[in-house]
Length: 135
Image (cartoon, rainbow, N blue to C red):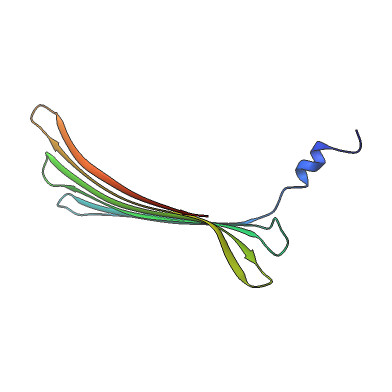
């Protein structure tokens, strides 16, 4: 069978990497039933699988949402979200960061709720999403 050791093989392919991850969210509330919240996050990872050409992974997402309680029976919500994920290879010899994959998503959502006398709720809404993938 030779000198093959599965344990040696597995451990010989573990790569070190660099990871950065940041995210935050804030919310603003007013006294007239209006609430606005926003969030954003960024993720970066670099893996040196090939000497002088590390793989890079990035993700940025952000969104904003408004909620308004118009009356005790009427509620409106509007939201927008954005997300972009990229994969690239850094060619240090030429100082180039070449993108090999990109996924961009945008979505918008609207929702209206009306509570009726017996506790029944009428909900009307819509959502539109746009997706773009590049290889």
